[in-house]
Length: 633
Ligand code: ADP
Ligand code: ZN
Image (cartoon, rainbow, N blue to C red):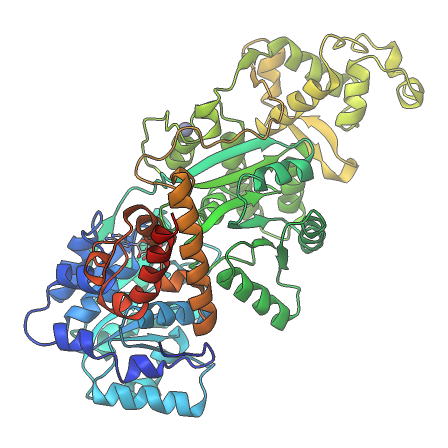
C-alpha cells in the first residue's frame, strides 16, 4: 500500500500508477454503468443520476438540485471518466477539494487540485500531468479558473466538462455568497463546447434562477428531486435543563460523531469544556479561534471515529464527512433554511441519523433582538422576522415536522412520516383561549412594562416586594391564573410570542407588549390552542425508522462485533495513509461486510462501495479480519 501524505495534494500513486481506469474507459465506448460498478462498486444509479450523467456525457449542460447525500458528486465524476479529457471541478474551499482528491485517489481515479496551498513542485507536477493527458479530474478554485494563466495552461488540453460545485455560492440570496463565482459565467465563451454542470443542495427558486442567469446556463436542463432526507429523524424539545437534555441526546450515540451548534463563541467554548468534563470527547470550533487550532479541530473531526464538534454556524460549509450521526442545536437557528442546512449535515451516507434542538422562550427573545437591533434596513428586517416566524411555526407545530419543513420549500408531503418526534409521540393540545385572555390581560393591565417572570407572579397571585410595590396585588388579574402551574404559564407565554400575539420590547428589559392580533383573542373572535409541553424523558426518537436505511444498531451481536473489528482495521489503515476513515470505506460498506462476510476477492466485489481499485488495495486486509473472526467463533 503506498503511503500517501496529506501534505501532498498530488498523489504519486494517482499520478503515475493509476492509469487502469483510463485504460479501461478512455478507449472506445465508456459506459457510465460500467464505471459505477467497477470504480465505485455500486450496482445501480439513484434517482435522476443516470439522466444527468447521460446528458453531460452527450455534451449537454445541467443544473443539478439534489439534497445533501443524494449523490451529486457522481453526476460529474462519472461523465469526466467517460468523456475525453480532464474534468474541471470548481470548488469553493480548499478543505473540500482535499477531501475529494483523497476520495478519488483511493478509488483509483487520477485526481489533483490546483489551489494556493500548492508548492511550486506540486504545481509543476499538475501542469505536467495535464499536458500528458494523465489526469481525470482537476479541482480548481473559482479565483484561479478565470485567470489568463489558467487559460494558457489549458491550451491544447482536452476538457471533458466543467462542474461548478456548491453553485449556490453565486447567489446573494444565501449565506455563502462568493463574488468570485460571478466570473464563472465567462467560462462558456472562454472554453466553448465544453459541457457545464452546476450543482447545489439549495432548493429555493431565487437561488436557482440566479445560478441559471449568472452562470449562463439557459440551455441547461434542470434536474431536481425531493428535498426530503428520510434517514434524518427530527426532534425539537422544549428547553428545560439544556445540558442534561444534551447529555441524554448524546448518550444515544456512543462511539459516533456529530455536531453541536451554539449561537455564541463563548457558549461553544463552555459547552465543549463541559462535555469533556463529562467524559465525552468534544472539541470547539468558531471563527474567533486561532486558525491553526481551528484547522486541527476540523481535521480531528474528519479523521477520528467518535468526536463531538461543538461549533458556531461558521462550521459546516464544505464538510463532506458522510458519517455525521447527529446534529444538536442548543440555540435556535435564524431561519428554516439555516435549520435545514445545518441539520442536513447529518447522515450524508444515508444511514439513520438524529437531529435534535432545544428551544425555549429565550431563543425567541434573543433572535428577535438580533433582528431588531441589527443594522439592516427595515425591509430586510421584515424579511428576517418572517423567516424567523416560519421556523417558530415548525417548532410549535403539532403536526409532522417533516411535512412542515418540506412545505416551507414548496414540497407537498403527506405527513405522518413516522420519523419525527411529533409523529412518534403525537402532541396533545388544549383549548387555551381562556388562559390566553388572562395572560394578555395581565400584560395589558400592568401597562406592557413587565417580563414573563413578573407576569407569572401576578397571574399565580404571588405577593412579593415587586407585586406589592406596583400595586399589582390589588388588580383583578392578580391570582386569576392560580389554577395553572408557573411552568405551564412559561409555555403559554412562549407560544403567544412564537405565534405573534405578543412581542418583546428590548428597550424595556424584555417587557412583553400586545400585538394587534391579540385583539381578536380578547374579543373571543379567535380560538387559541396550545401544545401540551411534555416532560423530557430522553426517549429515543428513532422509533419508526427510515425503511431504506439499515443501521449498524440493527446488526446482530456477532455481526456487530465483526463490524467493530472492521472499523478498527479501517481506522488503522486511515492512520497509516493519513486520510479520514470514510475515504477508505463508508460505514454502509462495513455493515455489508459484517453481514455478508465475503470469503475471497471475487465475493468482495458484490459488496456496495467496493470497486476494483479498493478491492486490490484493501481487500486482503479486510478479508483477513473476517477470516480471523470466523475462525475464532
Ligand atoms: P451529495 O454531494 O449529493 O451530498 P455525495 O455525492 O457525497 O452526495 O454522495 C453521498 C453518498 O452516497 C456517498 O457515500 C456516495 O458514494 C453514495 N452514492 C452516490 N451514488 C450512489 C449510488 N448510485 N449507489 C450507492 N451509493 C451512492
Ligand atoms: Zn413526521
